[in-house]
Image 1 (cartoon, rainbow, N blue to C red):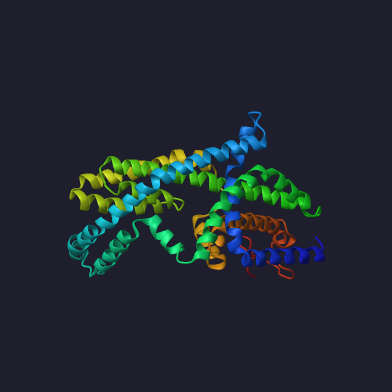
Image 2: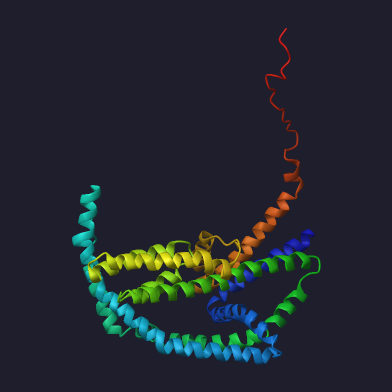
Amino acid sequence: MTTTLRWQLLALTVIVGAVLWLLAPVLTPFVIAAMFAYLFDPLVERMRKLRLGRGAATGIVFLVLTLLLILVLLWLVPYLQHQVSTLIRRLPDWIGWLQTDAVPWLNAKFDMELETPDVQQLVAVLQQHWKEAGGLAAAVLAQVSKSGFALVTWSVHVLIVPVAFFYLLRDWRNMIGHIHDLLPRSIEPVVARLAHESDDTLGGFLRGQLSVMIVLGVLYAIGLFAIGIDVGPLIGIIAGLISFVPYLGAITGVLMGAVAAFVQYHDWVHVAGVLIVFGVGHVIEGYVLVPRLVGEKIGLHPLAVIFAILAGGELFGFLGVLLALPVASVAMVLLRYAHERYRGSELYGSGRGPGIVVVPARSEQSAPPKP
């Protein structure tokens, strides 16, 4: 690659980054639509094997997803609202148990001096605002409706996402082909290889891990509901959603579920039930879900995922959060490629810098005899 071409690629990268930063609010619905199109493109390709056209397959997928979304909005959102209301009502009991039982026991048992913060006022504020808002949806609408322009913008974004999703899903393969044709021929083989590896990394993580999160959330929610915990489904869903970090979802779910079970029933039988639910879920995750849905190690470390999301949000706001995982997957592939180039370079292959002579140490057997 010539020096001129390197500078041109660097300038193009800077321009793309500047455009993303300037147009972040406008690009957000299109990025959301593109992520959905990327996720469901393999499903459309599978349906095409049934001798369906790209447009017909896209229409079927779009219709099914729309119906599922309507069912979720009609059933899951009100149910979650009820669960959150129940959780807020239970918070004073949780805090009271911590203040009167848990903290004194820990202080006496381990000779500690823990102090429970006074959060009763915070609970009262949460309960008051929850009742005034009438639930999560009402609170969001109240916040958005403070500005007429903000309400119009939000409404336009909501309408753009499904429309853009349909057209991007229908024309996804054509757009990828056009981008491939625009690549400079001198770098096309390397870029195509890196793009393929990035697709494997990102696609494996997103599709596999999202499937694991959904299945675990459902399993945890059903298990906690079966043992009679009133906020069990909400705890299970939370544990499932944060299970992309190993052990974090299970640990969070166990702590919240154990406290909820003990405060609600004041016995250890239901606490043991919580441990069984998450123990079984962890075994299923490790031996069934991850091997079948995620597969081999794909190179995205959980800490890299967390850092990418936080850094993206800090730099580009909500758009940065959406682009965090794609950028992180590409960065990991580029780092592996740079490592491969370094291992094949003369610098690594020589093993020594110029002018450095390494003299091996002589053993006592090989040392010359003393005069």
